[in-house]
Image (cartoon, rainbow over all chains, first blue to last red; front, top):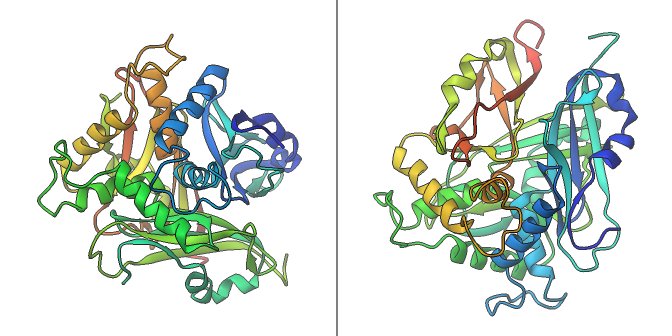
Amino acid sequence: MVERGFHLVTNEVVDALPELGEISVGLVHLLIQHTSASLALNEDASADVRRDFETWFDRAVPEGAPYWTHTLEGDDDMPAHVKAALLGPSLTLPVRDGRLALGTWQGIYLCEHRDRGGSRSLVATAWGESASTG
Amino acid sequence: MVERGFHLVTNEVVDALPELGEISVGLVHLLIQHTSASLALNEDASADVRRDFETWFDRAVPEGAPYWTHTLEGDDDMPAHVKAALLGPSLTLPVRDGRLALGTWQGIYLCEHRDRGGSRSLVATAWGESASTG
Amino acid sequence: MVERGFHLVTNEVVDALPELGEISVGLVHLLIQHTSASLALNEDASADVRRDFETWFDRAVPEGAPYWTHTLEGDDDMPAHVKAALLGPSLTLPVRDGRLALGTWQGIYLCEHRDRGGSRSLVATAWGESASTG
């Protein structure tokens, strides 16, 4: 469980997927099984980038706006759905020689859009050629 | 053909893809072959969530704004392109034991951003291990 | 290296991937390995659509806004990160009979969100059944 905001989780994801080490050329797909949290791929070096993401999304999709009608689950709920749809629930990432083939500055963000989102589940699926058969 | 707005189409998609039943571990990819409609994955229980999506997107990408130059195809055309790009034209979803492995509240949205978009085509591609060989 | 804006690159991508010609039913995945440029799929016929994309994104994610804290790399940097996350770093596209199975008006956009982004790298991964074995 993480607090609201944009969190770098590249290492957690890679550590949970030792199977990637067996793939010489392939892909891995991640789905977050929730509608008020999302996944993104962006700058992994600066915490202030992730804070600015939170600031921009909070302004672009404001809580308490008069046009929201789905308000029963809290002021943060409907904005969280919109933010989640804008960023998307999944990532598909290339794997080369047993490792994610990301750019130098790319890291995986888990974006928690609710104040108290609880624990979040990801489903991972990897496929490709293994080093021995590839 | 659906009216403008966000439509839950999970059942239609699954019913059109009996092949998913043969996949024990895999994925399915959906592409909407249009530039003014999109696919999203979000809350599938409340119609007011989908109405609020429409409200937010209409405010964020307004019709008739003075900065649009591509206006020949109607006031709803250029905003529809931007909305479609924000949400994206495709979904990749995990399949487990013959079924979509979505979260409890996740459903597939067909997002129609035009007033009269006409019929929309999706291309589906599934892959993975079958129950018999997996 | 391209200038800031939305650029149609379908032909460049296809020409760089002769392997697609061998796939009868499959997919191709593209990742742009950067955090201030992105990929999108949208209208490929009108240059004014792409200019309007640039206009909308510049207004929606403004440079020089007082709420940005990550400003050391220039006024265009943090907005570029947000734009890149909104559009996304990757596309997964179906392949049929050796060709991209896109809609009539769909083309691949390389979206350069920085004033001087430098050269940009894409990683492509294709998979599926070949014509001879499919």
